[in-house]
Length: 143
Length: 143
DNA sequence: CTTTATTTAATTGAACACAATTAGATTATA
DNA sequence: TATAATCTAATTGTGTTCAATTAAATAAAG
Image (cartoon, rainbow over the protein chains, first blue to last red):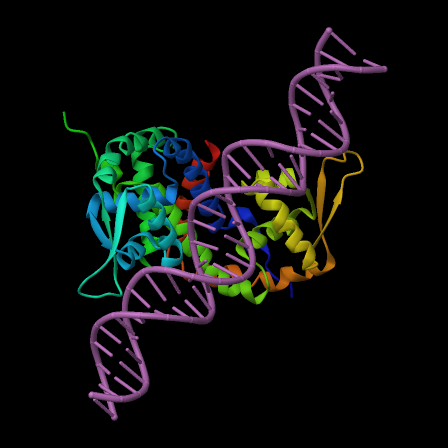
């Protein structure tokens, strides 16, 4: 009885191109992010901050699929750069609230120039990008 | 003149769901990989080893989109577990050859049970999976 | 045949990711 | 009210990831 080893090939797995693709695109972001002093992880945290202004670590983790082990040092780093402030909630001392600062808001303008530069080097048609988007969120929605 | 900040939202970016999705799927692998003593990175290296038997660090890096800074410690770890051996090429001393061992080959049987367990919890139809696969490789091909 | 350029891994240092644990605060229950 | 259970971040330890540098080997050019 021969075992089926076909699925044990890189070419037959979905996870590998997903994993490789994610890293390759982040690499495209890095030179641009360097210019505004952010890493990719700091950048996606700032995207939530620009949108929400104030969030708890828990909310941030739910949005970004990251836990406090990753977010605590990232928020401390963003605080040291002056882009967010951190304080405990007065209603519930367990909760840490991150809030965007003036400098954080100001950074948005420079950050806005980055996405168009990435978009043009990811050679998908708008249709394809939409399809990919839908499939990725379908996976995320069921995990 | 108002600036366009729409692309600075998580929901309007392709990179973020890609990045989140890749990490979520790797998280699905980990409990299964724990059972055979591998991390995800070690697992994809072994997938190349099962296929090729012998590869240089350079070839491995091209296949996996990883550089020697990542691969050197991973290969040393796999060597310490007895799944691969490492030696310099005699024709070109710069080249390090990784070769699969008996134990590495034997591991393939247990590893073959993992992909089916992942596939069933990634709720895409075969058609959707094929489309996703094609789009991811289209991106990888042009970066 | 040298000297220069290139190639290949390894090393170093910074920044994630994440599982597991800890500690403090809050809530629920006996 | 006590006390147990739960919730929230922070901490710890391991393992990547990558840019940049280093070092050794090989190839190319004069």
